[in-house]
Image (cartoon, rainbow, N blue to C red; front, side, top):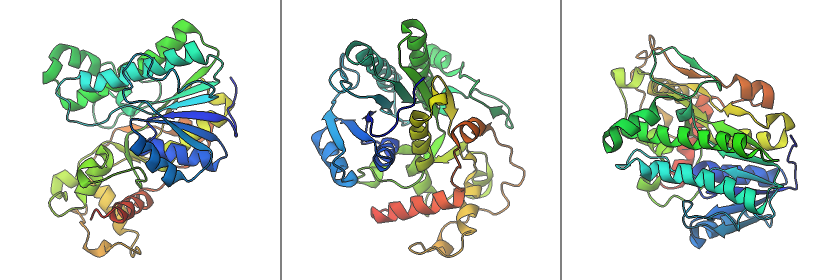
Length: 345
């Protein structure tokens, strides 16, 4: 196991994505050189302008499922942050999600083995979707847990499987494939996987319309619109776990810089949430420059007082990597301010 330290050259796949843009930004701030893969020159040019660093370059990979898609991109890099994978709930055919997630991950690992086997570390963005299983509320999950349910559900039900099970299957199959690759090929590099839940936080990547906001931030945006505001049991119900995108980026970067991270999985979670908790956390801040907090939705205060939550424990990331997770109110405030900055109210 070898730590990858600046000024190492790091490949970030899917660099124009929500999480990836923050990973690129933090790597550059830490003194790394970054090569990003993007689907088009316009996406790459946006990042060049955004990141404004001579240490950022991009290469175009139009289709991450294509054989050899990453062959050129991996050459000469010291490490890989593989973040490219779709997240949405619109897939009819499960392969819309499973194909890019699974083949993209396998493709990166294959390309590294063929063209740059001396790379030191590969970090794969996975998800708590690869950890969770149907369970009683009140369950605590750790990195030892694996989603054994979703792949079978999708195999049985195909296009009729619930949309979120299609997504969860894509994540667990991709992460499993990465660990199986390491077990079988015994490469000289080591693997780390990062498993976040719903990711909120400020957007810095290219978003041209409300309809193109990434799925998790779109859910938060909708909850603060008059038509999407939650009340009563909808506000108070357990809605999963959440994390700030800047913390997810930090876990990715610390997992490169710290030798002991090699071969490990890390849950990256700020804790459980209900929409009522989200509303309360913002209103508890009081006055916020740039936001009319007083007139934003308040939910139904107290609606979550008896709510039980499943928890994805970030204790390992906190103790091993030294991560201090952003408080909910700060994350919600910064997310809403960034949306306002893009013209989305």
